Image (cartoon, rainbow, N blue to C red):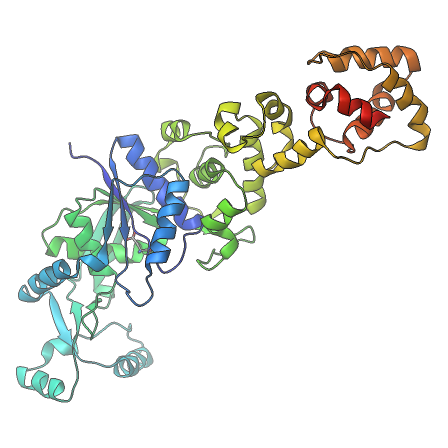
Length: 440
Ligand code: GLU
């Protein structure tokens, strides 16, 4: 059995957003599940728009998501290889020179449509004689190159969408090489998938239309056809598609916004599957439950508010070990007291203030006597998790107050807030000196 090899192939013309990250995460889960390899491939054939900065940013985003590529490749470093295989296709008569300008093609398409014919490239260039070709080049025209499709039904068994078939008779021969000799995405992607022995192409369904063509090219080059799995795309909460330029949905902005990477990963991995979306603290559980067959074909809705809630849920159960390096000034007792009351890890700063102060203690005029009595009953140090109970029982007996009338004024005076972590846990952290000061 061959090792499973998957690839994630972003174009470094921008940072990745949650939709691209989902593709990366599904590929990573596939690699983990099968003990396979994850290749990060930069589709940077567009050298004008691709930058090193974006590529580094994408690498940092993947690293933050816990994705560790076994191999990193750059298409821009492989042009000699693409030239070699393009020549092979030329020699086999599968890549042919065309000289039409964009305007000419446009006019031709319009004439076809006016006749009610499909606007498919008519292969006029194949009929050019050598002399006509020389004449066009003498005019200063340079050829672009089209792949000659076989024109047949191309079936494949999509691991998410099920059996698929596209009839390439209805397609224009795709342009693989531009006038200036640069490559469109189609051919380099196929060559890389062959050369890196990719076994599974897991990508968004916006690429379904490329698949039949890419399989034909793979076969023309004598390569092994990989398995294909096209997942549905994410929509926003409004049901509309996500655009790459939506900054707030970028992984970078989620990191800067203080979200936990595993909340983003859990959300992206489980969205659009038959499993409930729940927080997973590491990849282990996600890998166990992972299967391409669990992915729905329907578009999955991404809602930032749901991600925030998932982030909070994840934090609520995180053990001290998982966060202590990021909270150098805190203690385990503090973490266990406050983790249920935060949405993001940075929210702990607010609770550190509540514990160590200064705070604005709140005492309503009608509670002044009550608070003074309670203050007089504060137990002696040392304090622990039982102090709150023994103190409030004594206060209850002395003042006759109970329930909310007892607890709320104490909470307001001790924390300045009407909500927050259990006071039984907070009180020993606040300590006797500060409690005394806040109550007096
Ligand atoms: N660079 C392409 C994209 O980002 C990759 C498509 C593929 O996975 O083949 O859409």
